[in-house]
Image (cartoon, rainbow, N blue to C red; front, top):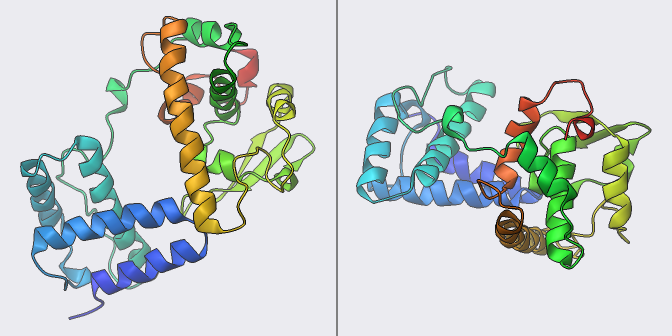
Length: 262
């Protein structure tokens, strides 16, 4: 029958937890649970995963009223486990998501803040609100850092900064070590939020990895709430989100300090 997909997936989930990737582990667990409900069984060989099965899974998710973002997440999680098995030589390379409709987000339809709106947000007087000032600073820090994810932002350590470069290991499993330019605007933001721990920003206080993950999620929720208020105050056409920072960076000129553009 070959390697069982569910047993293999659970081993990867445990590995994610051991390495502190609790959000990734949670997403895989949710996708796995939903996949079991779809199949009606908890046994499936990795070799039985096919593009046709993924299309049926997508159709099933649609009949259950799942949001496109949730459907996309679950399909991606199943595919990512398969791709890990490909790298380990367990199964042949296969475009597992070939044929599904929402496997990848449609970048053309993504709403982004204009450069004028970004400047308006950056220079707005938010001094009467600490949460809004903090949210804005984290937003622009991530843009200046070439689209740093919020989870990676929370886990950046002071020792990751060497001279004019920031080098860190992403919390997203499978991504390589990432190096970005450390510029004056990033330093200015970092100086405003001194941390007593090994981390650059004071998000994480607990030494327990699972508790630390909860702390990061709590800060992110507060930031998202602050973004809604900022959008109203600054008359923005769309509510800022951490999901758009990489696209905003990519819209800028590669190799140029983004803080000089915005």
